[in-house]
Length: 443
Image (tube, rainbow, N blue to C red; front, side, top):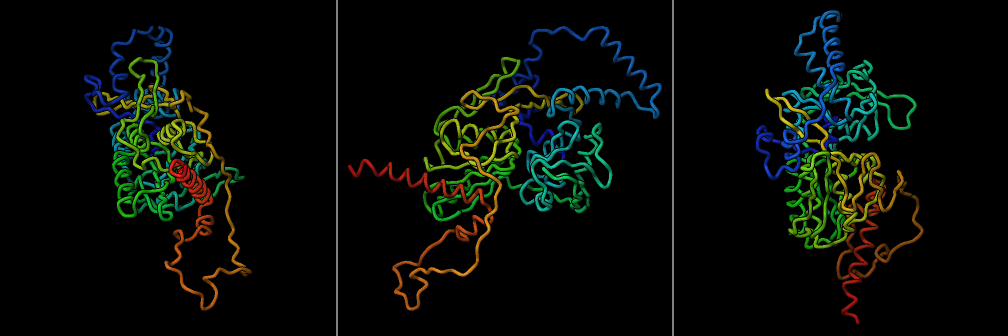
């Protein structure tokens, strides 16, 4: 999937008419429209124009294969944008179609988020339940070969296009895992990827697990629906874990909406760019916290990027959640999709974003409140030397059957150590909250 710059992009997507009349609800649209009103900058020097023209003519006349002028001009535009930062790019009609697919969560491919970093194809995160995730791809992996051929650092867009393909077709990736000495070959079968951006379940009575894999069109509505369904079925929640691990980002509107779902008030994120119109501040709209103030723990790691970092930063700086895990990816810039004539577009970095406390996470990431190490828990299944009353023969039955968490705490710790630790913190916060609420009545 060619989510390279896209997957990490904190996107403002403008309609075709946005340049003429930007809608009030698209925060970056005024920045696009204002380009016409911005002070005229000095144009390129005559020497630069002459150099470009000379190189253009040399390629036309002397390159080993004939290249038409349109292709050369598009290559020049592509190179100009690629030289700015890893997230700005020229989008053909095909590229725009792919962007629409990606933000809707439905496309054909592997389910992998990739960025072009220093001439490498670096994996930001595999998407849950996709061929890439099932094959064991990890955040930080570098794709060094495709179908037995080395990835050309000067033709990364070609390599990105190879990752997409018709469902049912196979592809072999040579992947260098972090800290590994040599790459491994992984053979994957492309699928029709339809990503459910939100999944949820009860970890145990009163405690919910909320997983957001990426931020797309339906994320806010789906998160709201699932939280309300859990509470309708089992009553008010005592706490929740929001899992943003390996979430590469997506739409800024979805990130703002998710943060708003857990905040009664406060700033969510602000953006600042060269143009005054790019300076925006998003605040909670006062619709109410869906958890009614119940404790919230957010899991983050080095694959938590962009829009996911907005949510993590907003909840941390507003003291609404405890962040646990690892320092996040550190992608703190905003991309705006600006339409061009002929159905093409430019995806351009137009601003940096800042967390409520005013900090930029660009290239730094967000530090969790509680750091967690990569660890696995080995469950000892040896002989048990102690028993409970319930294990004794002919024991007297209790009033109610003993309940337990889904699969038991030991199983959760063995399956997902980080999540197990998050539940422990969550339970502690819930106990403290209950004690605080009860204190006035006891006096």
